[in-house]
Image (cartoon, rainbow, N blue to C red; front, top):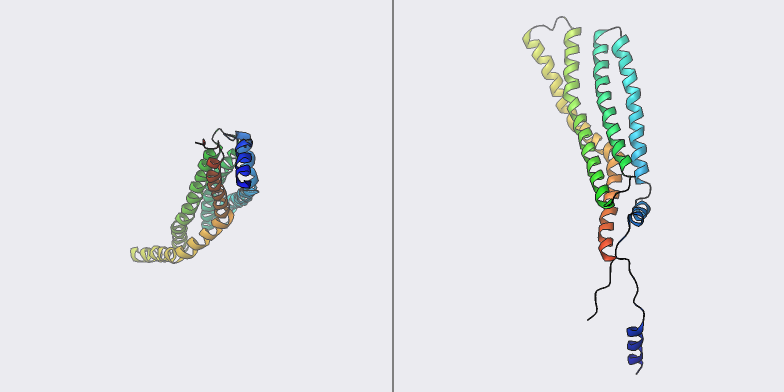
Length: 215
């Protein structure tokens, strides 16, 4: 008898209303709550590196113009070129991070596209860092040849340039490992957290909808 009463009460109870669709504002608030300070950390790190590269650019240009010896001017010009490329890279990164704050109809898809764009930029920065190794060693070899008048035969030139490239090969793995750790600490871990929260959001949103029709 008690079971029958319980069944009748269940059938007569009001159905719970579930929202059929989250609005953009609600979704934005949910993402912001779950992401915490991730965007602020990404923006802070990019601005910090941008400031460092501006300082490097100014100091490198000063060396390139005012250094008393040729090899210092050449090395300063190389550093200035690298700093200029990095500044452009960080401005692009900050632009992508800034667009994360802009609302979109498909907010989750918008944020995923932005995070993928940031990962592409981080990969570009990683490759650029590794590409500077043989270029820097080549410049060092040219400087050594310029400052050593006795090194003029083709064999001597080949030995010097070969030694510089061998040194770049030996430096490749340590610099690669250090760069990967550095980029993971500044950007990778925050992007991992953001993408993980977006995946959780994807799993939660389909569960919010109308109740299935009872037969």
